[in-house]
Amino acid sequence: METEKIIDLISYTVPAIVTGIVSYYFFFNYTKNEERKIKLSILKENQNNGLHLKLQAYERMTLFMERIKPSKLLLRVTSINNDKNAYTLSLINTIEQEFEHNLSQQIYISEECWSVIIAAKNATSQIIKKTSEDKNITNAQELREAILKRMLETSPPSTTALSFIKNEVKSIL
View: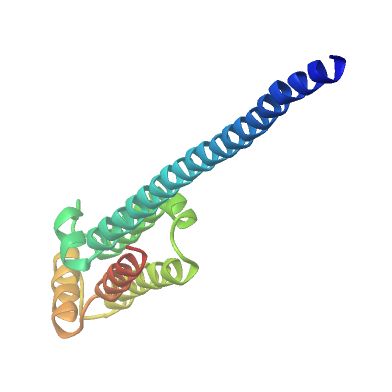
């Protein structure tokens, strides 16, 4: 009789233990899978935010390149007293201020792209300086005309930088 009770007890206990182990295994796997899904969605969201910040940086640097194009810069910055040297300084200071306003964007832009942007900024400043050194130019109006003529002969440095920025954005999208 006791053996019968033990067998009955085992016959009820073993299936319950097996069912418990199987349930634990499935619940454990389900929990792990859900945890992975949550981590993946967080990772995707962070990547999207990072991409958004990068694209904003490229947009700002595109705007910077457009704003320092000599043709647009000369329209925006006017001479107060028609003094050539004061106007030269005003143009270069405007470029530097625009650049300093966008310095933080280098965090999101590749080193190569940042170097191209700096080169375009420096080349634009050099064009203005070299043009103002011409002895035949005596006032700010003549300086404006000379810079514009020079830009008709060659493309502005910002155009090259803009092409580089566009290509880099295409590569990350």
